[in-house]
Length: 445
Image 1 (tube, rainbow, N blue to C red):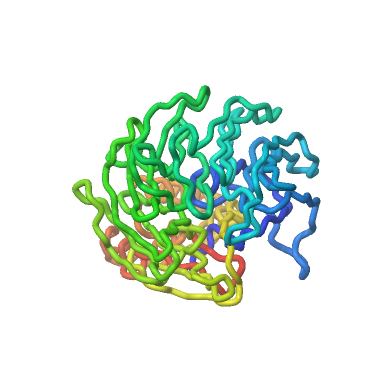
Image 2 (image 1 turned 135 degrees about the vertical axis):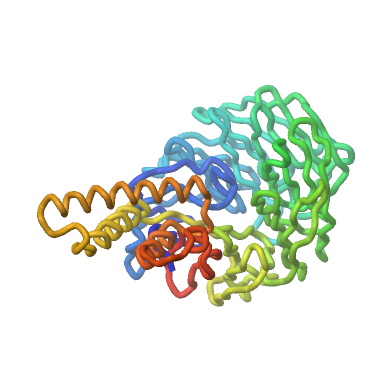
């Protein structure tokens, strides 16, 4: 198991922990739509009863998660059949502003309230209610820039559980799911709400739109009620679609793109499938029930997926699945249902330790250079130069092994008569190692 970088995988029940560096989380699933935070060097040394609570706030029922930009926290709730968009100081918990509008609580499969997450884009915040109310708000003041309704303005069709997808901002456009005939997906000008394009007839599946590069073109992946669809972000033309049906036409978990591959997963007995786009059409690489993402998508770290798998909350398991093969590596019971996040922990510390381990390893070869002060200095400069050279070449050549593993191999085999390409593609180096469920702190480069 490699150790240059530590990753901490944890259930994303909202908590506040001490962090040495802050990072924005401007939309659902984070800045890169992958559920992975860029924050690092935060403390995971929690007491038995958990990290210290800095503040709390009553928001009312709802399924909206939290987004953060410039130390301001945005989320949604419902109190007295009134939806509330909150802007809160992330450090103090003090409310900065709120925007309210009439909207019934509408208890569905949960307590009711809003089901989508706000999207922050520069000086604007975009929200979607379960009744299809769209608001573009000023991020600093909460003033309404413009508003629309998915049903009355775009002939949208509200699914049984209400509108749940978050807005996607792409350049000067905001992408929204309506479920309407001829306008299942719409792109609006984010400044004035004018219609840019409308496409499709599919019913909604509760998922949020996810951007994706397709043949050097900007595309959007849309998990409709009975298919995964890829559209051109420029004009809404359909690139391809892949049929995917569940017993209740529920597709809540967002698709996970990785290069020319896309992972989709659902609950309700369907499971997951990995698609590869070949000649403009999706081809199934594997499909099984090792990952049943009923509500929340998994997280992809290197070659492994980590996600809650269940059709029933109490029976949920945390599963680790090989992204490329669909093989179940391990499964952990007893954590319940929920969402996942991944965050870096002490990244720079382990990079520095790797560097000094490399130097220490070179200083052991004393009989080649001697033990005088000048000889030791020479060894140190040689070690530094070799370290930098190997690190640069490792990145430029995109070697399959981790940097740590590469250094291990060079340290073990420096004088063996083995071609360098065979050394760096040695059996056992090609595949990364999945994170272990037996630890909270888990290693991955």
